[in-house]
Picture: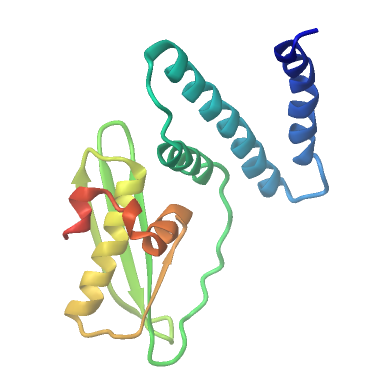
Length: 178
């Protein structure tokens, strides 16, 4: 058996082992995210391989990781129980959404007593869910600054928005100078 034949013969065992990782005693939401990650990783590897072999495109690992992150982050939903911010803080809950025809974002600001301070919603035209989420977070920061709220607690359900704030190079260029 050639070297490549051995790799093909052992790949199903490896894939089964990885797939069984999600079969542990984890909560259902974790299993959904892990399964989504596994599927998207294999899909990214397969797509990169096909692009390299048939289109002579050099795989870009950063775009593959971003693609995997976007697809995994949009799987599964979880419930968040709202908690008021600390005294003298303003909490903003922000969200964005996208369909095939439009995208929008919105924010709600509340004080430490849970009292409504202001809210905002905007149709941002045709865009992706990530752009809508980022746009909402950026709007929230701009509104807080305009109202001189220096202690802002920004809450979002988007892991990608949090990752983007931690790694500014992930911000799309057309939003980076805003």
